[in-house]
Length: 246
Length: 251
Image 1 (cartoon, each protein chain N blue to C red):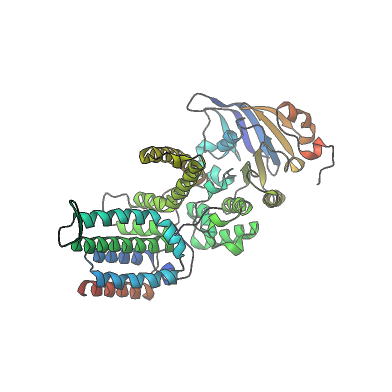
Image 2 (image 1 turned 120 degrees about the vertical axis):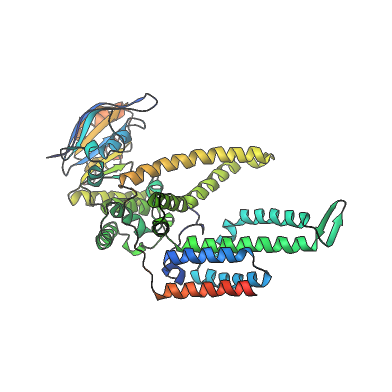
């Protein structure tokens, strides 16, 4: 079953630049999809249409069969988005407050909010520092906190925009493990990145974008040769013809 | 890592952290009004209480001095203006400039009052979540007709929440400009304009990103705010502050 359907989606920015041009995509429930492309290729613009942060100029985006523009709150609850800059996403004064932000916006009662926050923090391993100020966390912890903030809204789809940017190796590992465990628990995962190093092996599907257009779409192992043509760095394992860890 | 400032909520377990925010606002208003006409004895009494509270809350004095360094500069200007402009018995005179005994007294007392009020504000901000402030402001404004209480409260809580972010941004921009030798430019207007333009641009960019992130998590004025609960401890605190204010008035 397709959880996301995008039909003939185009978006033009206020300065006249065409951000997306006639995108047609369907994403099956429970899949792990990576959207690759250089900076400015339209990845983030596409993701922002999935929960109505941007609305299409032409075309339609449906979540579970319902157009996003018909019910923005529903779309935002189903599609949780983790942004590139964790610092800009954290709004709470403590780790707990930040995770509670989403459920509070959903007008849930206090007991349900506490339950969801506690579950989300346990899931990302931050429950012991619930009263900590978010600004003192490490990069990896901040990214996991943003994931917890989304998980507390119980989304079905998790969308990550450049989830590994500005992270050191342990931070990347922590975030990757988190993403894999969320995928294993049945979430649909969409990752937009220009750096395919960490995620290529785990993806069910690779979508490559350039200048606001989907230029390739298929199984990651079949699109390896297209990466260099599009100026995207191949993952190290493929470059040195090594076997990637599974 | 972001440098921590005390101009933001610091989690803790102190009496102030547990006090109902409405009572804290009432105390803040009472102390501020009483301080306007406080004499040296009253100010000494208040400063002593504030120092004990500051230590009890567990705030760092070093961090406080760092955060308030520009306030000290402002206070210094106020002090200088006061000692040079107040008429009275001259202590020191040079040409047409004279420093008077009354000027020194006025300058010290005004700066002291301002500093005490600022410390009260810091204690309030560092022990109160911005969402609690939002709930309290909405509760206070609710009976007043024609005022959109929730909207005003939301705006206030956002300002409170993002003050440290803007200060942090200002520090980063200033550091980046110092790294490119802005200190060689002696004209303060040039330096202020360069800092201001960069800071405004980055603050707006960051505000844009924040707005997207908050929208993505379904933010609106209608949300489950923290519950406002008062108990006997809050009333004890209020009575204590009232007694302090009365004592400050009569000494």
